Length: 240
Image (cartoon, rainbow, N blue to C red; front, side, top):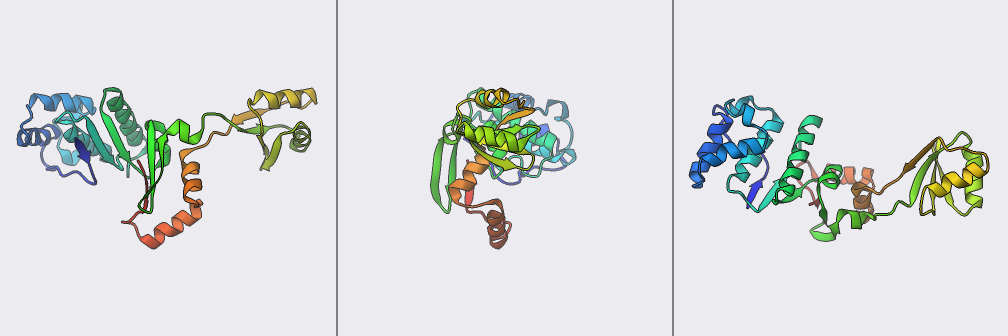
C-alpha cells in the first residue's frame, strides 16, 4: 500500500532522484526502481533538478512517485489536485487513469466532484460520519438522459406544442428544458412537424455534484455557509 496525504516531506536542496533514492534505500527497494518511478510519474527529464525548483504539480508527482516505490497494489491519494492550475490538474488526472489501467487500485479522496466523476469508476459518499451512497458512478447517476435543453427561435410556441404532445417543459433563460422523452429525436420531430426548427439540442446529464447535493439535502449556498462555520481545516462530507 502507498499513500499521499497532505504535503509531502522532501529535502528542497536535493534533486528529485536523490530524494527518491534516499527513500528507496530506507525501505530496501532497489535504486533501479527510482528511474522507473520517475518515468512513470513524468519527471524523468527533471530528475536532476532540485525539489525546491519544482512546481506544485511536479511536487505532487514526486510524492506519488515515492508512494509507488514499493509497487503497491493500493494507492491512497488525498486531494491530489488541491491548489494545482488547470494543466497540473489534467496531468494528475491522466496519471491516475494510467495507474488504474496498469492494475493499481487508486483510492481517491476529494471534494472536487467533477474530477472524481472523470477519473473514478466507483464512488462512496460520506456525510456526518455515515456512508450515504456507494457504487459505480454510472449506476448512481443513471445512464439514461431524461432531460434535454432545447434552443429555438420561438420558445413560447415550442413550449405550447411540446406540452400538447405530452412533454414536461420549463423555461431556462433563452432555452427550454424538456422532460418525459426516451430520445431527444422525439423533440425535434414534434417541433419540425409544426414548422419550428431546433437550433440547439443538448442532453442534460446528471453530475456527481448534483447527486451529492441532492443526497445530502444541501444547495451550494447552504454548503458554503456550513463550511464557513466549521472553519477551513474541518470537513464532514467527502467523496472517495
